[in-house]
Length: 464
Image 1 (cartoon, rainbow, N blue to C red):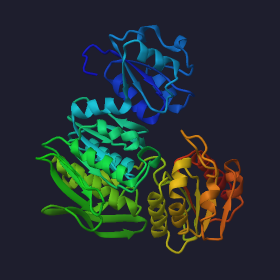
Image 2: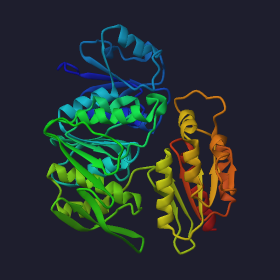
Image 3: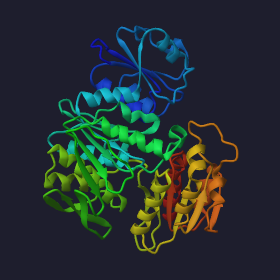
Image 4: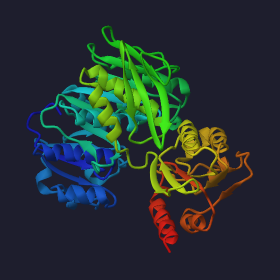
């Protein structure tokens, strides 16, 4: 990375959402980009259209000849690509500089003034809110997000001359330890990824180390009430945010005709009448974190806060409406990425607040065998907040099966007797024939791929 003569970048795992953003970033700066992924997707199609050379063949024959010189080619990989990958093994054995995506993002944070959003949950929404605010203002930013920001149709925001960057600081595999934040935000530290960390103590220690990486002239922004004991360097200013307490918080939260407003309180002042573009209760907390981080950059004005938050379009799969029928008895289908027990609980509570008195059905697809094993009881307790619960097949992602662990592990712990298990491939037909009122689909797997078809079928049927 420190070499000035890298003019080409090869990505092993280029189709991942985070890798695709980096590939686009380098393409925008005139570098040649190539890469490998296991299967094609809309992201790889878009990258190819923008000039990247992409293969789906795990062989050296598929690596372009002009990307085989270690003197001018940087190799970036994601841990999702196995070490046995043939091109990756070649690069490692032949003197190439081979770096994880997290290291490359770290270099970007060292070359800019970065806002890095961390936490068990809330990273994608808060970072995308902050990126949208800054992009809407005069200063702009470069942003690398963990989800597709609607309206932008991308997880990347580019600025040719802004000194600011906005990043999602991922704790998985301790990736965020590669970053050098100017402003570090910690949203939540509920234990997760125990397949990596082993214990809650080790998880918290990882976040504590993250706080040590902040620039000495920077800021640490912590949610109130965390177990985390931070260790920022001398000179780092520490601030707190929360729903109702902290240096930054919300006040006068109110709803009217399907809209949600709040007042943003900051040290020495407040900004009244901020409207949420995605009006769900959990986004009040997310907005406070995003606004606080941008306030610390010195670029936030009341006008910018109001206009940007009202126009915030939301992120795909973060409380995304696929069906929203009008009237007091209209049905709704909402898809949310919630895949941790606390995320799931807050998602369900937000739907409850949005549709008081309506019957809520939650369809949940567990994500990872290890997470299901570690938090089965907590998932069951969250799902008990619904009127009806549906569980589908567990989504294994990167993991091999763990004996005795499946969706049924959670199912058996749910106290609500109005529960059922269905195969993922039967989901659409089952729900079309079920008289639900409000449906929330949740999880980080592929159940979400069925939701647009379900919503379209229901909308078409209602027009007949």
